[in-house]
Length: 527
Image (cartoon, rainbow, N blue to C red; front, side, top):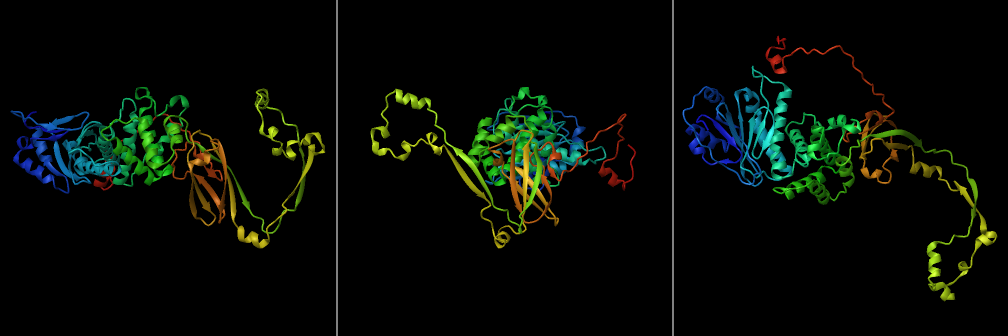
């Protein structure tokens, strides 16, 4: 490359001693033990290099093991910084960023630290990062390769930036660095099943973003807008990647949301994290298929998830669980039901001979009770349909026994019984999460496992005992299950307005971003 270029690549550079200046080499050695990113090429040096006219060239030598692909980058405009990440085994991984001056306000502050944070978080939930470097390069959009990835995120000309640009850059860096794990190491075939790398990685980048900044709201709930589309606009996650129409929702959003449901709602974090780590470790540097993922998650956790794989990955039915009605009961502590007698006839009819019985006789089988009369008793010759026993009256007394007032007070007191009637309007079963609001203003969350649907996937009824009077019931209060219709999730029924919009045309006036406003004392800046 031209002698004034800085080069980054998949692999480990073998000749920094010959391609870097003495000052750059000294900074590189300092970066190996630094707590903060060290600029091997500074902003001022990058600006100066941008105007240089190289006379010769340099050869950069890189070596990489266990990679399925590689990429590289080269520019005289690069600022280059680095710091280490130390793995569980004490191995040093150099985290690095290459970026132009236009990205400096964001990348110098976040990029390399985000790379290190990504390795730390992904490794916690999978396996220690096995490569010697991890690189983020500022570029026009996001793309991943082993050990190196390309990410967007430039500031305004005045050095300010919007919150969206900041978190967009952080998010894409996490996502593309995370692809080292899925599919570069857990080496699935994204041409066949894109969700196995993009979907799993989208789930993991949300986990990582939350551990970076918990004020960022996860985007998993957004999948409901996709799930409520007409059926002819949907396809199963397991659709071959070349046939997917809505690529973002199908291959990224829906599988990521599904894994989050498994972790937070269906399996729980402890079981999910254990099984997910087992999948990652079992299949690193191998070639898993969807069946391997499904099998490992069940095998390692001991949880039957067939219903979930079938519905969420192979089907297109949405989640729409409705609370149809509520009945409220209290025990009558003062009055007892009066005993009531009921009588009904019981008729005996001659049993019909079956084909098996007839063929047994035709076959000449010798029956034990006919060969040995001692095995016969009263009932062998009992034919009530031929006698007055053909009709017998049965008598039952309802409420024959009742509790005493003391027993009722001890057993039931002033308890409240709520019978809830649920129906599955969407087609996909899911755990039912109930938020109870009581008369005294307190609340309670109750979780009903998905097995409640096992004998009837269309509807179920369940009675709940509460010590306090209930004033409101809400289903899926945290939007965990991607329920597409919240209007049927409340009791008493909460009317949600149907919105319509009218407009002649749209016109957006450019506005300064919050950083610009703050710098100007909140005075309006002309666009």
